[in-house]
Image (cartoon, rainbow, N blue to C red; front, side):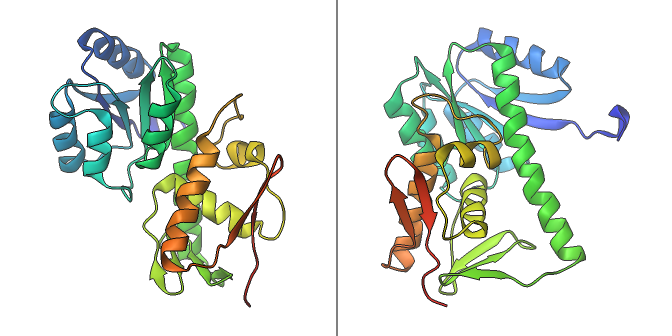
Length: 242
């Protein structure tokens, strides 16, 4: 595919730091992204609802509505991926943001190339999902069902005992990968590289939180735990009932 046919991705930047927002907008536009910038959580939330974006960059500390309040308002099953921008690598902010539905986080201050790499990783995994869905529509295959959990890649939906799971895009990918590799231990590093499309960083809790979110959502529908944590090794999606 030539550069002229590559579709420009539209990013919504929600950050109250006007100087940073201007710098990031200029940088991302040179990298062939279209950027819409909002300087407070309320206007950013309105934009997120009104327009269609490929990615949202969301700061935590903002006036009117902070980043967590924006996440809550969007709901945990939103389809647009969200990259949280947290201050000083605050672990509590990171974990709370992921639990509320963010796909990933990046601690301020960060290098522009680091932000670009993280954006591309998120967009890459979203592209993988869309490609799988398109292939499934074109050439349908048998739906994958393990332990009463059914994956429909054509519609990008997963059900548990015929109840639809409300998942973020990243949670969907994590669960699909675990189901496809059921009954064996999957390390956090493997999930990070195969699903998040980036290497696992030291003290990175992203995978733990995403797996925990999926696990809780499954337990709401079926009290029989379908996942097992293997201390120091990773996670297993149990085959369970036939």
